[in-house]
Image (cartoon, rainbow, N blue to C red):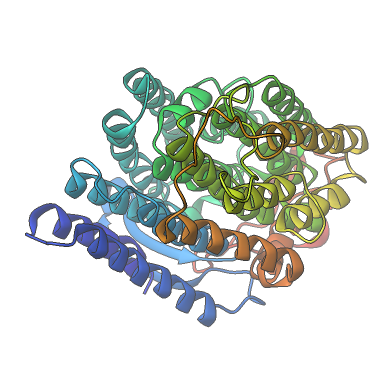
Length: 512
């Protein structure tokens, strides 16, 4: 069942690459659409009251290396699987009709979708690493071939940073297995490790830096603005909407999940790290003149909220962190799509040039209206999904880290500042009379933004549709971690999970 989400897009990519298909885009959309429907069917069958892994699959592979084909899904990975499937379809649909080398483009997009799904589903550390690395080359090609100005520089920078990310994560995984004396990279077998606290802290630090590059967090973010700006609109949607969430997922699954005692020790530092990222991303975004670069920098700040929620590690804040992953993916996708439409219609992304797009006759009124909605969602306006996720994070984190939480709330105010600047200069004012009528929107340009806007609005009004999928799993995760105020070396001697049990297990209350 779960394998379909991995291999169907991969086989579809191979088919598009080699078969003489006449309608390549239609074929790619059909493949991604089927994968999306399959993901929704799995969500329909998913028991959201069960915190453990469901629909598990196991197939012996290279047992001498400790590598087996193990898949499973829980409340931490399911929302991100749905996000991956949706944004893959959105990215394919929003691609240009007459794109260069379409066969390769659509194949690479589908290959990325399958690899990311595999990473979200993998329950073997080596299997996760393989999927984590597989998407690297397709993204490099998507940026370097179909990117804009400075695409070669941006693609190479992305390749180097993400290669370093993978190397650090692999070292942490190998170190864990070697020091533990385990004969397998199975996730469930390694959850019960009882290494000294200082060893756990070293390994967790490698994991945090490795996945911190992928998110990215300050000061590991320098690849992001160049890459997001150089990437085409569909690729930017996947980079910000899906790939960054893979980094956040990895921190929770393999950082928090494998090293809970070390996480409790480092939690205050992680909360401070998150705060720095939030404030830095917001302040740098305010200074930008390129609206695409402004949206790119805004991503750094919003990913900081996710780390804050994980650092506080209350049931409410962790639910908010997972919700923020999905909310940010949807919001960033609609913003990048609309920025791409503006650039295509107007021919510029410069705030000093753009003006009056809300003009109902000669401007782009629908784009402006949707851009306002996207900006409001990013700023956390009530009634939209951005408010729900940020409120959960702040409400759950304040009792643990009040100062860092208040500073992050200030970050939401700064978010409102730069989006007011963007909307005021882009949508309002008088349209330059020297400019004739802008081309009207086609339906293919409207559909992705409308789907994303309706999803953002619906989940903002009915957040339980999103929260319920992850609540039981995140509650179980919180129960496995000792109190943040009393991390002790003795706490590593918590009960070891049964080899037959896969997923999050609530241990004995003695650890508290």
